[in-house]
Length: 482
Image (cartoon, rainbow, N blue to C red):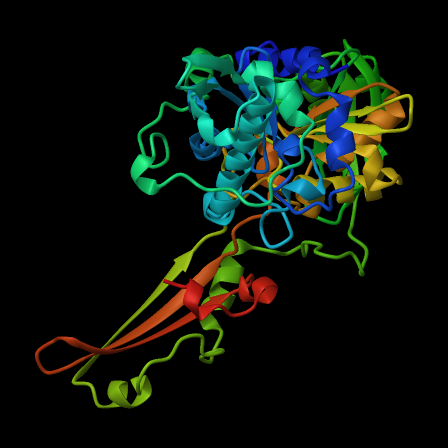
């Protein structure tokens, strides 16, 4: 059973399951199964044209308020010749078809459109070409005698028009063309033009469904209490029996670095887990990323400020040191930035359901479905192919919904669903979110500027001191720094 999602978008998504047997014939598998998968090229992985000629599009990128679902409808619709308003867009499942960013897949860094633009245009053009081929075969005409207008193939000489929905079956059985002609920029109707956001109405009327809104049949709810310091583990639960007897409580669980209460509503789960009196153990000596007992952000900031040296030169132009030495005046300043949480509107959540055939189904806010699928498989002890990932629309993200080890709730949801024998929906309270979020590192920057006799700047020396340089993960990229 899928999530009980009663939004317009959810209803249309559910309706698609009823029409796929009509619009997506087995012939498509025969025509395309043997083709090697080049990401972004297999039309059937992205597009379904319904009998009413509306389009269901599976986006490789996740919507989180940035408008990517609308952008994908504009780009694909331009070449397919379908008005974006007639698109329903949803997040695609994990799979090789969607690895559009250097052989990987993620939503972030303002990279979605710029990395997929040409590929998605070709996808739309390929689908249009297939529809033209199907229409030509049906009418006994040459493709050169046909054209399209939004949602229809046109034979201008006779005035005949065939809606896309009537051609979908035949077109789906054809091979994807290897070479297509793209529309001239001068003829764009939707790319680069103001278009109403596809999700604006549902968001404005409260119908938009986020992960925290979703439900599945038989679902229980869970809330957690984390160790005050990363690395601590739950020891004695002083009042476990008392909390177990609270209204609606189903069960109490010890988790890595946390305790959880499963109940018949999230509010009851939260009230119960907050009432638990837990004695937390000290982190073991070898515990990775454990927080020291005496840690203080103010002390850490003072340490960064007092760290001597110039570090590794990241960008250098001219003789800054020599110019500073001869400057008429030196101006110095030190700035600091605190730890910051991502602060997205929607708190982290996850729904986990173990199915009878041994698969694990997850509904989780995420920016990289394949990464989450692989990690969930490790947690569950099953093959990645047995993990089904649903990627709901994100309630904001700012990078929060990447894979951050102890900062993600889905491993807890997997363990709780297994222990409870029922689907479990886990939501972190805002307090738990702030406690376990992966923070933007604290940083200090020291500046020295040299001025000439007229008070104009002639040299600048800047040293940044921090604990999480991007270069550690991605290497030094001076051309990517403003």
